Length: 452
Ligand code: GAP
Image (cartoon, rainbow, N blue to C red):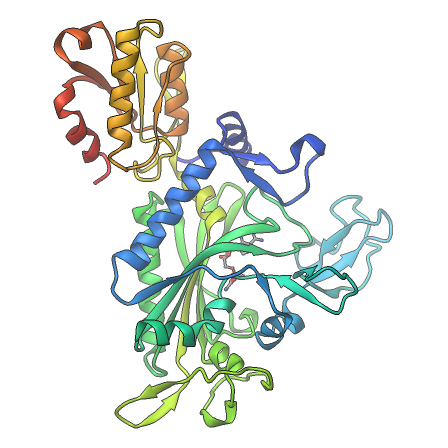
């Protein structure tokens, strides 16, 4: 099941501490959101699942965590200074600003006037001053995508790991874009996170690898609980391709507001390493790169059979963490009818993504023995390292179940008077609501099964 509207998700996210409007108490800033106690856990779990599948479960990918502030020359060479723009129009009537390509019938969405300026390019990159003097001479960009520092670190990583092509470099981190019209909750924001892999391959094998990564990525989203029927691989039209791309497949997802891009998988050819390399003329670069007079490093690799060097091609699966989280919340959101008068809202998250893995509930909050036993169970499960386990020692049991259904906790464990007699606890399953009595000594095994 999915949510019937974005409002349902926004409301749950605020009510249960997943996502809040940033700077809320001062009126907020458009396009910025904060992740609350549940949101930060869900986000970390999603990023960890991606990292695990990219770095730990493969033997051909290394990780990186590079700086967010980028030297202007990097984004000059990458083409962002010249081309990373959206067409901006002003409404002369109400003075609002819009993205020209998102207007319907060329009218202002605010006041419906058609008295608009001609579209002009608006660069989406944020700038900030570097050093103590803000005179415009020394500045950096907040990176608009995470991948550029993967390219600038290419040689460092090859030299320090002895990797040979094909291999990849993975990175998760913040990216910033001064979106003209941020909208649809966390779908289009100004500060967001990306999970990007740059996979370096031999020219000629690029199309095969491109297809490989499209299939892999769809399977991965499915393994995170996204119904395959709601995912669509769409080939981007040639005229809409980014300046670096020979071919891009967008994985589109049916978000509550419509079918839109969740992840893009691009064949970036030799554009990136070709743009950042020293001595470009020493290589047979196929793409249309900007002349480079600043780089200090050659970014080619050896073709051992032919005793030549070449610039590898890049296949890039680039996913948005925030969009992924929105898709996963939407997929998990379920409203069930319990009886004629009652429904329950439950987040049927895959257990590895659940913000809280188990809630341990002492049935009598003022009974020292029961509370001590509940604490001991909490600590024991916590030490298994599967994620956050919580001691739920406020509110009644009905309210506790309701809250944990809504935040997607796979199991609630109740400690009661019987526990003191026979060392057993009651386990309630989130999805079936079935309750079963389990001996404390079997609890670890029972609990761990949820995460495999
Ligand atoms: N390095 C390639 C690149 O950045 P992109 O299609 O511009 O490609 C990749 O971005 C992914 O980043 C998108 O599929 C989307 O999930 C996410 N993304 C891009 N802009 C975003 C925004 N303003 N808000 C939230 N997510 C965004």
